[in-house]
Picture (spheres, rainbow, N blue to C red):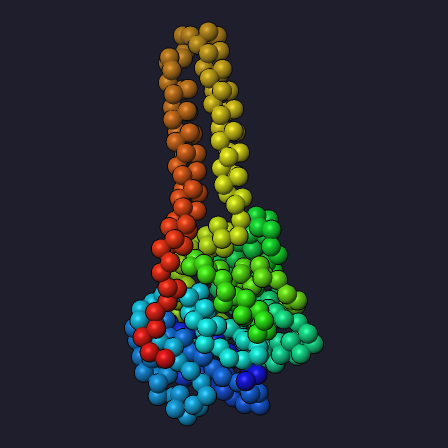
Length: 303
């Protein structure tokens, strides 16, 4: 088997048949298998897939018992992929399947990871474009690994890379970071991302924030160091407020309510810093909690 293509799906009944047809047409001259991971869809995605696949018995469906999330779906696909090269691509056709041929050419040249890098992002809001831009620049500064900017999960990986990823047991996964962490020879191919042809995005702001937190906390301890330096800074500010309160009391006793300014400044400022620092610690403790439970990353209903 030369190529495995992993396609996660969640409530994509409006487009799943077109995705299946486009991928089969695009790869008709390539020995391949398609692995559709149905991430607990509540619509007719599963029924449509089970109707389509008998015509191509070399393809696979993996049905989850419930929604375990985008990154878990990709991981399940990696567990079932048999190809010498593996491509992961979203099922909404925003990422062009035609780019797979260029990825294969780079793979044949000896590159073990070929990632798709976006030039343009059609149909997305200014807010989403800005937050994506900011996220990659921030994580690039905070982490010691080189995560290429403006990339998603769309990429091709050699079998040796896939085997290494399958050996990583962590639950809170940020796949594009893990691929960079394992190393190997990489290159990017640029493309313009299209609008969705049907359906709506299954990645709302809440999930985007969760993925960003997984990426930052999974590959950097910098937030903990930042909270330490913030503690030092607030201690110095607190000392400054203390000195200012004493000077105010002696220099302008008639206009100063005793203790009010210093008390309120200290309470508001230090309370905010403490809550933020506790939140940062909580993110890391939450990751530890998820890891020590050793629950499976996903549960299959039927393959």
